[in-house]
Each structure stands twice: as structure tokens, then as C-alpha cells.
Image 1: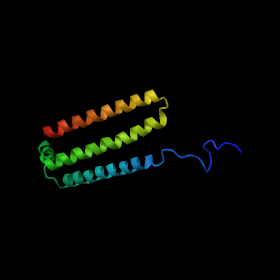
Image 2 (image 1 turned 60 degrees about the vertical axis):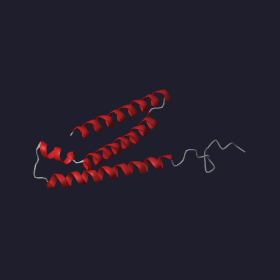
Image 3 (image 1 turned 90 degrees about the vertical axis):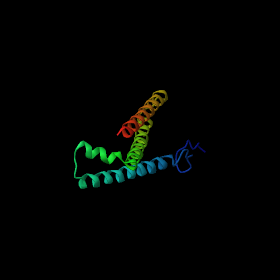
Image 4 (image 1 turned 180 degrees about the vertical axis):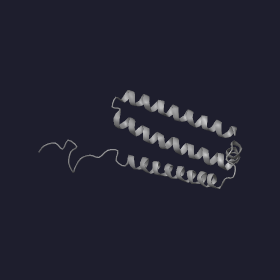
Length: 122
């Protein structure tokens, strides 16, 4: 009898369902970003003051700073999942893929830090 070689109905499945968690995380982060977008649109269409002071006033409230930062963290995590999947799918040399992963993480963390500085300066 020939060896199975991991092909056919009796193949050994390893690492199954890892993609499901990432898929759910991307949908959750997308929902957070959608809710935040609705909040901004409601404010925008109901606003009377379209000047810098008007924009600064909405971001002066602590709850809006927190909502904005949570949305940005959701955006960064959403981006991490997508970019990491691109690196895993298309970059075959492991060393290069790990380097790109590290550079992506550093860039996303730096962006989160910069966003926090901007938000808490307003």
C-alpha cells in the first residue's frame, strides 16, 4: 500500500482554524471603525461650526479622545492582520518575512504612539 503523503481524505491537518480567529478580529475591528465613522458623520452633519475651533471642540472631550484612540488601535490591529497575511502568503524566505514582520510592528507601534501624542495635545 502506498504512503498517504498528506494527500486525500486521510491527510493530517495541522494548524487548522488559525485563520478564523484573524477573520473574526478583522470583522470586529471593522465594526469599531464603522461605529466611529457614524459618530463623526452625525457630528459633521449636525455641526454649526466648521472651523478649526469646531473640530478641536469635538476632540477636546475626553470620551472622544478615548473613542478616537480605540478606533486607531483597531485600525492598527486590522492593518497588522492584513499585512502579516500578505507577508505570510507572498514572502517565502523566512528571514525576510520575519524582518518585514518586525518592521511592520515597529511602524504600527510608532504610529500608535504618534497618534496618542496628537490626541492628547488637543
